[in-house]
Length: 50
Image (tube, rainbow, N blue to C red; front, side, top):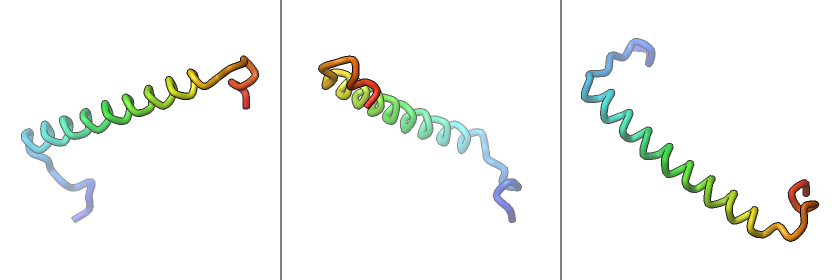
């Protein structure tokens, strides 16, 4: 059976969506923290482009 032939139940879809949303939110928070950390480390405008 190929992956595209799989049929997900409504419950499986809900669980998968919740897991995806949680992982997505964690990743977005990590990116936001990293961007904030880097921006705070800039001392001159030239640092933005290096």
